Image 1 (cartoon, rainbow, N blue to C red):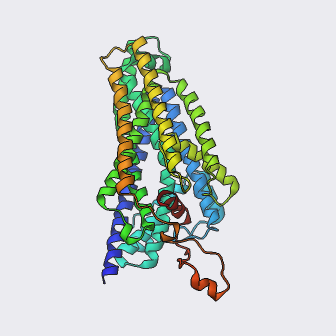
Image 2: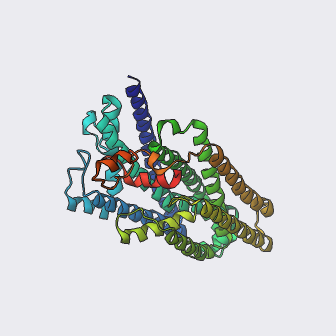
Amino acid sequence: MPGSEDEFKCCTRDFLFTCVDLLLFLFDIGLDIWAAVSLYKQEAYVYFSLLLLFLLGSSMLVQVYSWLWYRYDDFKMKTKIEKKPSQCQLKLLHVFQLGIFFRLFHECVQCVHSAPGVMEKSVQSLYRKRADAESVAKFLRQDLRILRFIETFSESAPQLALMLTIILHEGRLDPVTELLGSSNKESAFVLTLPLALPSVLKAIGSTLSIASFLTTYDHSMRTFLPEKEKHHMISLVFYFIWNLVLISSRLTALAVFASVLPCFIFAHFICSWLVLFFFAWRSKTDFMDDPRAEWLYRSTVGLIWYFNWFSVAKGMRIRSVLYHAYILIDICILCGLWCWKMSTDPPDFVTHPLTTAACVVAVYVLGLLFKVIYYTFFHPNLDKDKLKGATIPEEQPEDEERSHSVPTRLLKATDNKRMRKLAENFFC
């Protein structure tokens, strides 16, 4: 049957996405450990502390969201492995920062049915074409995509900015000497030279992590679109390019500023986050089920907006324009301060700070151009009721009222309301 064949192709693609995402996740963890060990061995304690702060802070944030979502779903487990631990054991897993691993990893066994979590249901749906397994797999994948979304901008993006800063410090001795507390420039240069390889590889790993997220997150949101609105490859390419270009320009601006004024980057983050948190509050988000947890979400939105934009409510086009104007001005200021510092305290290596700063600003403008092209030609604009998995309508006891109402599909237990809400904010 054509429908079954399309479903099989869809679940095959989802299975491959899950495998690639898992491999990149493991690769990124390995690079995290290697980078942390290298920084500690080279006595770069400031960098080491910052890296641990990003890792632990992001992990705790993701664990909190994971636990809250289990609670919001009344601890209704959908796979064999999820049903094994008790509620108390599940809480302990999250306390010890293992909740996300419990959701994602699976035991390597030959029997497909014994594989847990996302991989369990993905493999079953791939080889058995079971509709219930595929719907559960989709639900679990979408929760993981949102958790990876939070992790990307609370861990990968800050790590990439840190690694770029370290790389810039490799060619500039003075900031390295100040941060490491050394009075001998030559010894400071020799000390930080072994950090180059871990920094470069970790920067590449963080970039791959961000790139993987951009692809899988967009794919998950578009599962709620009608079949005729499903994206073509060219729309995915434009979505990927404008996000990656904007994020790269933003992170580069932060890195060059931190390379010459490392202490002021913390003040810059706090001031910017307060402003962005205020606008997140004014956007009246309603993502979480608990009003108190909604403040946590708004705080997370402020953190994400520090690096990149995403819609948190419907009708955010004007605010998106204001946001990009604010970030563009901020990038210009950061690059301008870097150029001023370069001119007053020139580095030992040959560079063209004005050209570099202009390129960073130009790349951000280029990303905005790609974004305009995407929204003009490829972005589907739909009504809320046209998305798949419509929310449960209000009760209509009268048959006459039902006959005149717009038909909607009830929200099933395997429909992920969290990802659907994000899809509504993005497409509606």
